[in-house]
Image (tube, rainbow, N blue to C red):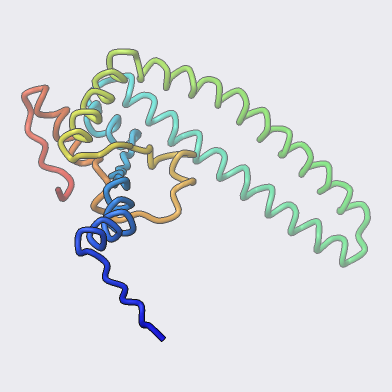
Length: 190
């Protein structure tokens, strides 16, 4: 029997290697992603703005009132459970009414004050302030070679499960806004 000799030319091996291994590597593009805390940028870079200060004060007052009302409701619910265990039907019904009233108050407060806060936020975030912040974010993102930047504050931040601190450009954006205003930013750690 005759043996077949398989001699594969080196150039054919190199081409096969390139197609198998190098082509997928060349086709992959690394996307660098960043995050920015828009609220922190606004409250730090524009803290001298009266509208921003008023909005932040109103927001803090709103949170305090919501927390106090929520705690009161929880306390009343606890008292109602105790009244139910003690089979004190009159007290239980009275507490149930108070709980319903406080929940209604809290719902109305959230709705009405939420609308007022939204109006204050819109006033604080006038078109020029938003353009200034977005312009600074765009510049920093380009300098950092980022293809995509997410907000890391409020409801936007809840979708971020994990991040490295290095992808947070918030401090750099604040510094850029201060530089544009001819001021020095000494906060933060970057």
